[in-house]
Image 1 (spheres, rainbow, N blue to C red):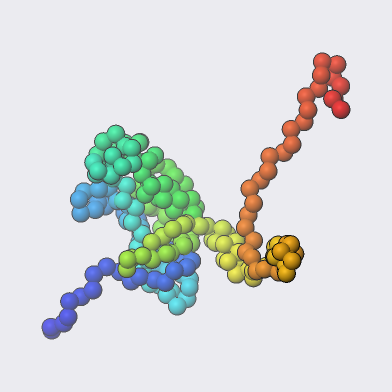
Image 2: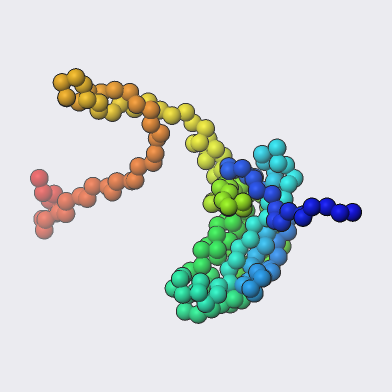
Amino acid sequence: MKHPEAPKGGQTYPPGLYTLKVVSQEDTEAKNGQFTVAVDTRIVKPKAFANQPFPIRFCIGVTGDTAEKLGIAEEDLEAANDETWEKNPSARRYGSYLSAAGVPDVQDTEEEGQNAIGSVFVVMNEPRDGYNDVKAFYSEGEAASVEAEAAAPARKAKTPDKGQNGLHRTGNVTSVRTASPRRPAPKAEPADESGEWDD
């Protein structure tokens, strides 16, 4: 039967959180020989995409050009050097995936792959250029917090607004609450030699 050219690649999903279940994980290599961990998952949520495939690839081996950009001493297509695992962002993403899926990092991708089957985790997908692009990995508990935060309504906050006379007055403005950095605890004044605190 004649047909038009078959599309290449998988389905691109809309941006958002996806709950995934690991179906398989195997060590493979990219076309240029770079060591890659291929994780095949199925979507659990959202229900509109339930049971659809969502493959994730961690290309950990590095070419000479990539090694130079990442500050790695030499090409390491097989990802055999510790430095590659420490400096390659794909290796760090792989570690985030293991953590989110609740899979112990035993420094053996084959064993980790066996332990990962059936694990459930959540990703933040931000597709670009026709491909799914996982920006973050979450455990199911962490994802619930992220969803709740995203669903929270914007809060009204008072901010200065210039009145008719040019002086600032207070007005209501919609804002989104953001986390503020922790301030360090105040340092206690040291006691003098007598053990008395300075006033």
